[in-house]
Length: 368
Figure 1 (cartoon, rainbow, N blue to C red):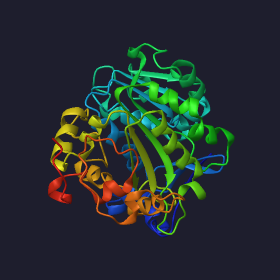
Figure 2 (cartoon, rainbow, N blue to C red):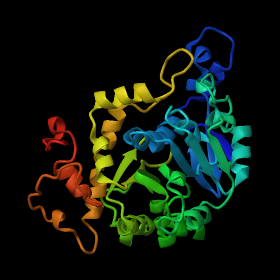
Figure 3 (cartoon, helix red, strand yellow):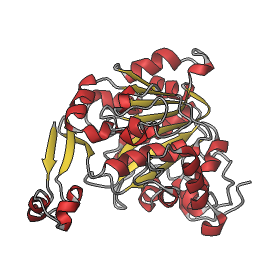
Figure 4 (cartoon, rainbow, N blue to C red):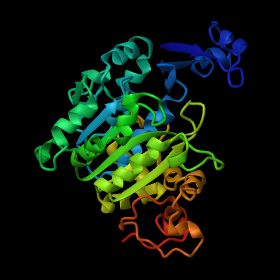
C-alpha cells in the first residue's frame, strides 16, 4: 500500500496549498519542499519513504560499492521498489545488476505510484542506460525466491563457475525482527548464509540492512528483539567472512535511525573502507555516472557522509558488551593497535577504541 502523509512537525498544510498556486512565492517555486511524504507499506511495515529515499538507498548501496575496487557484477536481494537498483546503476564499473525479487507486484506498484524510485533519467544519456531503470541493458530482473536461487547455485563451494560470482551482494529485504517465517530464514539459515559467502568473489562484500539502531539502554541483540541480527552475525563469521562492520543512517525516513551491516570476505578489501574524505570524493568523481549537466547523480552520499559510517555507533558497542559472554575487549583493558588489513571478525569495541580508521583523526596505526 502507498500513502501520502503530512507530518505537522515538518510540513505545513498552508504552505503546501500555497505551493500549488500559480505565483512567484517561494513555496510555488519550490513545491517539492512542501509536498506530502509518500510512504510504501508492505504487510503494515514501512518499506520506503519519499523523504528518506536518497538517504536510505544511497547509504545501503554506495559505501560498499565505492569500497570495492571494481564491482562488475552486483546482486540485489529484494528491493522491488527499484531504488536500490537505481543507485547500483550509477556506478560505471557495473556490467550486470541482478535484482532477485520474489514479488513482481511490488515493482508494478512502485512504477505506478512511486515513479521516482525507478527513475534513471539522470543517467539515461549514457550508453545502455534508460529512463526507466529496469530498461537498462545491464539489468537482469528475476522474480523468484532469492534464498532458493542462492542455495541452488552457491551452497557448495565451487558449485558455480567463478564468473557467476558477484562482487557485491545487497540484501534489501525484510527486517530481522519481522515476525514472518521467511524473514527468520533470511537471517538465520546456515545454508543460505553459506551460499551468500560462496556467491561472492574473493574480494566480495555483502551488504545487509539490519533494522533499527538499538538504544544505549537496549539489551544485547541475542536476548532482545533482534535475536536474528545476532544469529546472522555469528553465522557470517562461521562461514568465513573476515570482518563485519555495522553503521547507521539517521535520515532514512523511518521511525528510528536505521542500521546496515557490511561483511568483507577479505580483510584487505576492508582497508579501503577507511579512506579519508578527499579520497572518497575523488573515487566517487571517477566512478559515478554524471547527469547531463555534468553534476553528480548522487543527492546525499559523499566523502563526508562516508566518514560518518566508518565507526559503529556507541549503542552497538554497548549492547555488544551486554552479551551473556562479554568479550575480553569489553573489560576496559587496553587494546593493542590493530592494522586495518587484519581480520577482527565483529567487534565494535575494537573499531571504536583501537586503531582501525585514519590516524590523523582517531590516533590510529598506518594502513599500509
